[in-house]
Length: 182
Image 1 (cartoon, one colour):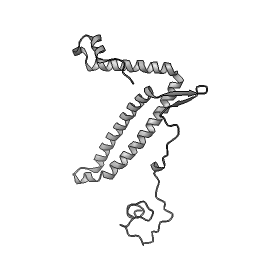
Image 2 (cartoon, rainbow, N blue to C red):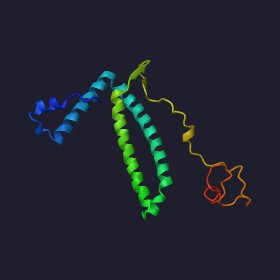
Image 3 (cartoon, rainbow, N blue to C red):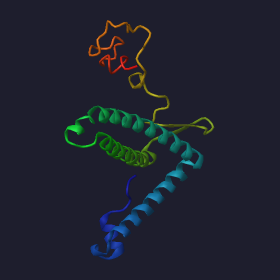
Image 4 (cartoon, rainbow, N blue to C red):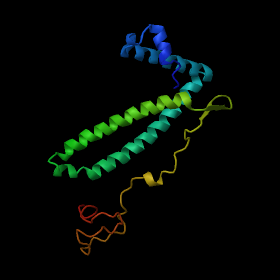
């Protein structure tokens, strides 16, 4: 949201730059954000504001969660290298996974606050349909995001596939890591 005061205005209110501490500054920012939120709600109306918040939250949460899953997959691929550094891979995976999750939650909060204040809203019909520019109504093409198990129908496991050869299902993994372990 756009902050409505400048450092010079704060100094003029308090009297000196030294009198501005972290608590005072955070209280002023919180008060300013609350006023901006109430103004935005008054402009749009409470029902439209709730619908906007819902749509923005769902959109941001969906996108950030997919990004988080990709990051966790990337982390899982490289976690085995931690063992070479004499670190327990399970503990490292837990720690780094939690850090990624915390970063995702912070990103959701930041982007949600930004979009609620800055997104362009159009109300259609009787006010029950709210559209926000830049917020996707339908899921985007997620064909690349689908996680599916390998097709087991055409897999030959009669002993003609060695354990270290690529799996015949087409996954790209070794047979022993894919269908050979089953």
